Every structure is written in C-alpha cells, then in structure tokens.
Length: 459
Ligand SMILES: [Zn+2]
Image 1 (cartoon, rainbow, N blue to C red):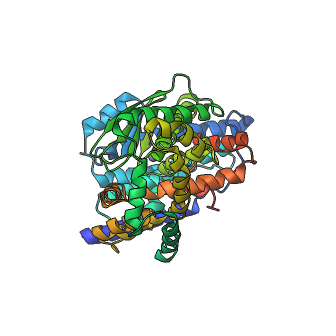
Image 2 (spheres, rainbow, N blue to C red; image 1 turned 90 degrees about the vertical axis):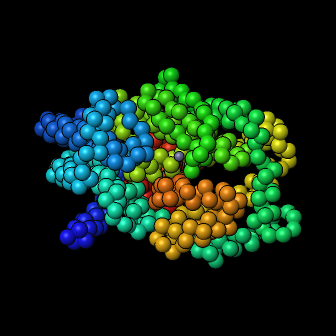
Image 3 (cartoon, protein in one colour; image 1 turned 60 degrees about the vertical axis):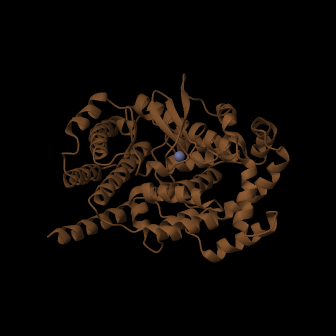
C-alpha cells in the first residue's frame, strides 16, 4: 500500500514538474501596474486581483505550516504576526499529505482563472504563485521521503535545470592553471599556498568588510533608489556550512552573518558585500517588500520559502550584483587601492589573483556537477570532497565544508552559478551598453515576480 502510494505520488510530482516546465512566460513586455483597464475588463481584473490575494494569503499560511515540519524552510517572514503565531500553535500536527493537497488545491484555483485579458503583471503574478506552489508540493513530497533525481528536484523547486561540466573540460582548465601558478609540486598544493597569501587577518576582518559593504552600497545608490532608512547589521558566527547569510527581517532591515570557521580571503569582502548586501539580498528583499507587500498588498512576498523558484532569482541577482557594482577592472582597482592596504596584503599580488580567477570562472559549473553526481549516487561522500577540492582548488577542510552545504541544501546549489548566468544573459539582452540601462534591466529583476524559465536562455 505504502509503495503504491509512493508511486502514484511520484507520477503526480512528475506531472507537476512537466507543468512547471511548460508554463514558461517567455519574455513579456513590461506593463506598468498603474494602468487601468476600462469598464467590464476593469471589474474582471479586480475580481482576479481579489482571488489572487486570497490564494496568496492561503499560500503564506501553507508555507508557514510547512516551516513547522522543515526547519530552515521559511527564510524570511514579515507578514501578519498572528499568522506566524497560528502556524506555531498548530506545530507539525497537520500531516504532510494534507498540506500537499492544499498546495494542489491552491494551484487549481489559479488554473481556473481566465487571465487572457489580465495585465502582464497580473499574469506574471499568477504564474509566479503557481510555480511557488509547485515547489511547495515538491518539497513536501521530498519530506515524505520521495526521492528525486538532482535535475527533477531543481526543475520542481527552482524552475530550472543546470548545465554540468565534464572532467575533460575541467582538466583542460587545470592545465592552464598549471602554467600560471608559481612553485613546484602538485597544482592543488601550490594553489592553496598561493591562495593563503590573500587571507584577511582576523583582527582586520570587520574593518575590511565594512569598507567593502560601504563601497557596494555607494555604487548601488548611484542607480537604485532604496527605501528610506534601509539598514543592516553584521555579525560573525561559527559552525555553519555556508560562508555568509542574509536574514531579512522586514522593514528594509537585514541581519548579515559571516562565518569565520575558515580563513577568509580578501576577494570575499566585495563578494559578500555585494551578494549579501548591495545590490544583492538586502536590496532584493527591500525592493520586493516595498513594491509588492507595501504598495500592492501582495502578501505572498512577505514570506520567502528557501526551496522555491524565488531563490534562483535571489542568488542569481546577488551573484551578478558583484559585476553590476564593480564592472570590468573597477573591482580590481578598488581592491588593490583600498582593501589590500587595509588588510595588510601586498597590492602587487592582486593582478595575479585576478588572472587565476578568470580561469576558475571557466570551471564554475564544477561544483554543481559534483553536487549532481553525489546526490544522484554516482559519488561517495569522499569522492565528492575530492572532486570539489580538485576542481575548485580548495583545501580538503574547505571542500568538506562545501560538501556539508550540498548535504544540507541539495539542489539549491544551482541557484548561484546558473542563476548568475541567467541574470547576466537577461541584462545583456535587455540593456544597451551603458551603466544606466544595465541597472534599469537589473532593477526589473529585483522588483518583478519572475522565475527562471521566464528569464530566457544562458548565452
Ligand atoms: Zn545568497
């Protein structure tokens, strides 16, 4: 009986994934939400808006209920406090199967709507909610013990399937690195020795981070208008599988945590400042809150389920945000002139690191590929650690930390690399060759209900 149930559950989930893949919006012309449709159409769209508001409320409550079964699932929530209290009072007593059928029922309510005459933004909202609900159902199926392949999981949870990498292609890049990294002996050892020249001394960590975050913020503010009073605090923690985390609190406030378990390299300062702060997660959340939750009353944006399509946009814009704030050689110049002296690292080394990173970028899908092989059962844990150490050129301790990240977050890993590539391609397609129009295209992504399949292809 149990097995039969599992099989039919799996078929159901496969059809959900199919639905997710065909629902792609394609590129749609942006329609300002202020526009009014005349007469009957206006009345109909008002009804659709009300129905979607109702679905959104039930969706938020559903996500909060799933959070009672899955710690870490609710990454941020700043909607009505009584909904969180209700979910907490109910605890995990609502069975997973019941939650799963609620997700399907909400999805059906959206599918019944006639959206043909609705504004683009309303259609995007309906598609976004549908895909978020598909992800809720998939996560619930996983919590029930259903096993999905890596690609099935990412299609259902993040609306995307990532490219991989072959040993041949990766080994070819290692060959190029061989010639670049000085010293004798195995490349891995030489690279780690080379990398160790770039560690920020612990006592200077905060000063360097604050300087990097301030520069990321200043560069973002040149192009984006942020909510008044937006702010963040930084704290340093240990014992985590991630290297940094933004815990968005609502009211344009973030708590940014930095993990100091392992030495932190100088280039992480700009990475983290942009990724966690400006124009990354902090700005992403603050703009979603302002536009959708405060201005439009779309409460689905007051909750952020971690294992959902929203995460690909979040990580993709956060990672690509580094290039937005520091295009071309600007990053290298800033690091060399400001951060290296502050950290007491020789600025003459910066160009060498930049050259090595250019090669490492060619191997950027290695981590996703390692995760896919490990989670699909082709690699043992040890093989996964060795793969990450070999192709990300990190110490075994760091590779082990990264494998713990894979174990905890699974297919989530695609959101960083594929997400950034999708965002980069989107911005390139929709912007002219000047900073203002690149930022305008980027801002659309920071304040739009989009999921991966609507972004288009990677170039
Ligand atoms: Zn992130």
